[in-house]
Image 1 (spheres, rainbow, N blue to C red):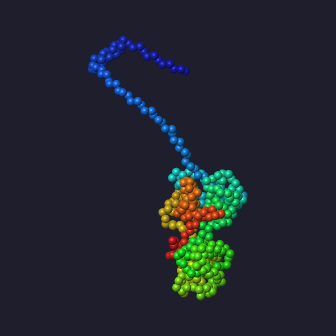
Image 2 (tube, rainbow, N blue to C red):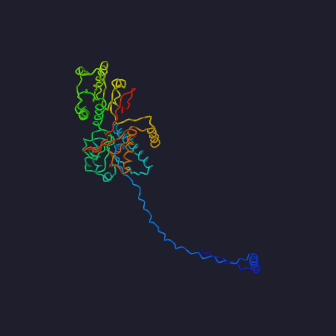
Image 3 (cartoon, rainbow, N blue to C red):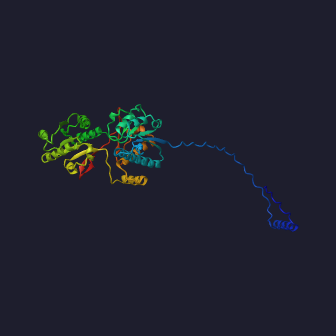
Length: 413
């Protein structure tokens, strides 16, 4: 239905008279003001307004990171349940991911943007090899993983030409075995520990000879070969290395070469429990007459059967890539944030993931990943100081030298 406006009712005569009276009264009461002609202002010519074209803001950069970890998701189904081994791997993967993700989330506060892509390597070299052909992974700004040597070898064997970095986040294996110029080895390999020990002995202690006590197992050569090369190079062949394989801890063959006044330097590259138990006891007996300073394998830090009291008595030094200060404010803040985010206590792998996420995430955000050798980093769990080595990629060369003091390990320098 369409509505139409009602017409206004005609005014009555009385109402017309009232309006006329009001008009006359107002006119009589109004003051008589002679109009004054206002001066004519000369208008200034208007300047043309130039409107600048709007500045087109480029969208913030989003860095794409592909994370390749052994979650083993194929074990979730009832047909192939997790074993103790695969469950441990999955926990390592989950903890590392949580720490890494927390780091990226914290960096977004500074305006950085990331897209994190997760892939399951299943701790299967064939799966890792297959992922190396994935176009989405290859287009990433950074690839982190795989974490196990066989998977790393299978993955990097496909991506051998020069490209963006591939981070080996946890494996301590020497990058020499992978032969890949794109690899970034975060965990310092054993030869780096050997070199650091040799550097300290040569520069600080300056002995005339070093006694190397071997168990006879071939894996000790992974430490001894780079150690010997480093000593020869740093000392100009002025330090003599005396190597013996004591049987049942028998050190009598070298007694005549020991000093009664200066500290005798012993390097023990073994991790064999039976050998260490007997040999370290023999060194302790030697202390009754001869001063002794001992340098052990970096793996000693995790050997629970070694007595801290005995190691302190022998002035034992070891190198370590890890040096966590559990009283530090940074660590306590991280633990608080991790608990809030994941409702779980962080493991060492979570802390490592956080350190690496902060370092590589910041480098990506600043578009300075190509300058990795110029950017050191002091993390909660690890420090990074990368060197580019021919055929090996970038290698972290930062290790701590620790000494047993007050029954715990303290940093020497």
